[in-house]
Amino acid sequence: MPLSIYRYHNKECKEKLLKLGLPVSAHSEYNDCNCMIWIKGMTDNTVMPRQTTHLRDWKAAQALLRSEDSASKDTAVHGPTLEDCITKYLDSRKNQIGKKAHGQFRLVLGRLKEYASQQNKMFIRELDVDLCEDFITYGLVMVENSKATSAAKIRCFLKEAFRRKWITEPLAINIKAPTAVYEPGNPFEKKEVELILTGAEAISGGVSAYAKFPKTFRLLLELMNETGLRCGDAIRYNPLKCEKSDLLWIYTYIPQKTRRTKQPKPADVYLTERLKLAIDNSEWMSRNLPFAYLSVSGKDDKTSYMANEVYERMKSVGAKCGVDDCRPHRLRDTFAVRALLNGLSLDDVSKLLNHSSISVTEKHYAAWVSGRKKRLERLLFQSFIDSQGN
Image (cartoon, rainbow, N blue to C red; front, side, top):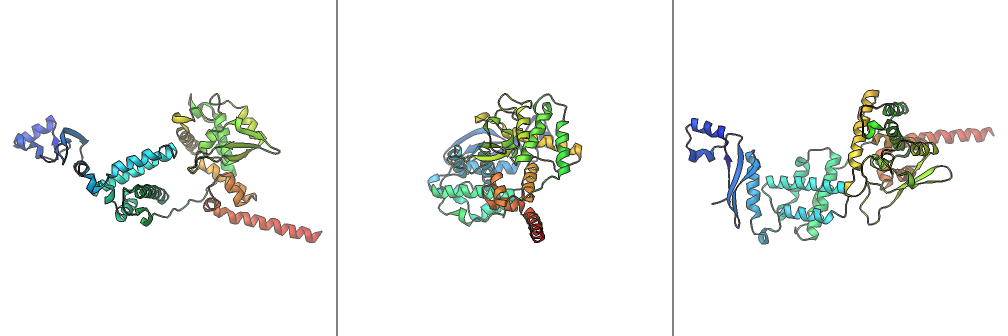
């Protein structure tokens, strides 16, 4: 008996069918209800006992039926299944990329598999440029920047698939991805920063996390505002890694967001004496770190969770003090724009932000480069006047 799906009707539905005059033998053919769908039968090489699909949507169950049927075909003819290749690829990269990036790859490739299944494509060699580009265009419901990032992950997968001979055509070369449109930096105004810091210190209503340590939470925001640290890196700030220099304290750390390398490259930011001592003398949220109340290492790393808590807490503070779009990354933007307007070069700001290249910095903060140029123009003009006066 070939593989088939049918509704397993509940008691109420069976009584309804009997009232309609349908014989019991015809109940399995009735589909105009929301009862659970079951599957049974044989594939080319497997007997599948009667079992639930855990689905109620008929189209989804049909896609599952096609998947089960296709998976049983001879892989010597069709090549490996897309699902198997995705699993092998993710397993091979588990120790090469971070946990967060690995989860993003798993999410994007899982959606690609589902989209291909809907087109009745179960084997990786059935993928083509049209299907992949249609998936990027119609299957990814997200902003263009995220689409571009997801497309890059798909190309990485297809490059590896071609290298390992899972596919016979270099699909990655021919796929066109959406162009990423970088959002310009969106700094806070000076008055907004003051309102946020005051509001942060006034938070209450909790017995744990940042609500329990409002003064420490304010210092966390000050750290991001004065150093340009990303939220996750600021949460992981370790005072023991600060060294006193001639004018400032230098904090050396390993950024969370970094390109995959065998040896992670450390980065530096600079703290004033005031901020360094204020953090040292504050009420720390854990024994070893001032801003981390959960683990930040190994498999129990909860940095992303705590960063989301900072995001939610800042939203609440912004709503109370009347600051729109109040989120951690805008403190980083504020630092970058302030540095540019104060005369630092784009290259120096890029290093302070630990960007992969100066072009990344320019894409985000190009709007303020002209303002910096005008300031330098005024300073130079003033120097000409002073020299002529002398």
